[in-house]
Amino acid sequence: MTNLLTEAFKKAQNLPEHIQEELAKQLIEDIESELQWQQTLSKPQNSILDELARKALNESSEGKTRVMGFDEL
Picture 1 (cartoon, rainbow, N blue to C red):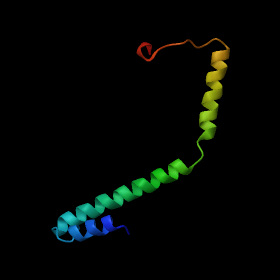
Picture 2 (picture 1 turned 45 degrees about the horizontal axis):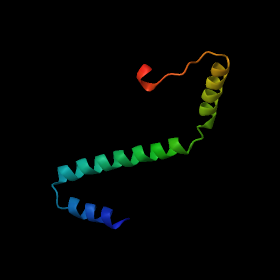
Picture 3 (picture 1 turned 90 degrees about the horizontal axis):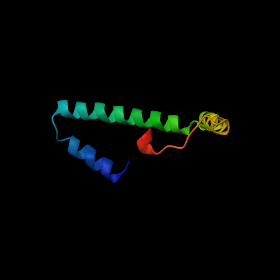
Picture 4 (picture 1 turned 90 degrees about the vertical axis):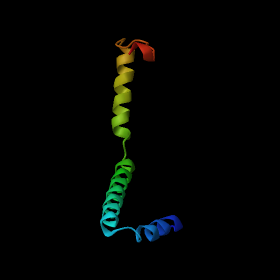
């Protein structure tokens, strides 16, 4: 455990129990969310991006696209 996290837990010990419970719930929720993001980001995403890139290139070569600026979208 890092020094900063240890310090946070020490400070939390001085808070009323109901606030400690709320902090614990928030921390657990944040940890679970972070773990889900790490799992999601660790999965290969290339197949979806590759398919979209192929589709865009095909549409461009078939003349189905046109050059536009961001203000024209």
